[in-house]
Image (cartoon, rainbow, N blue to C red; front, side):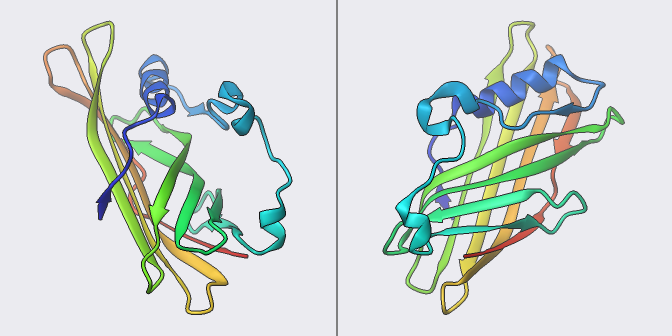
Length: 178
């Protein structure tokens, strides 16, 4: 797997929002959508008419949406986005986050994959959050379907460095078609 671009402010906000909401279920969708006009919501594109946007669902119990946009030549995933549910080990429940990856190279055989982290975020109260994730997948031979695995994990440490909670999506299978 390659190395994903550095964590976005969105991922940092997710980690910080989680710390504020520990002990409660937090649902955030879409986080950071107002950050730019580009992320302000759905827009019509001529590329969709040429079959470069795939849509589907995660195969997890929650069945969250997955959208994969590929370049016209289908050699790069422009953006892959999904809703991911994390369960926490402390018994505090869990929360749902949007996650996305961009600019992923697709091999000649149709495979792709990238991971990031763990990246550490230092909070004002002395606690830290380690965030890591990955995506991998492949297109079918006709390039009409794409499927893969997605994972996201957040580990919260107290000010002494001891692990307070771990929230993990586990490996989430997903599929999408054009």
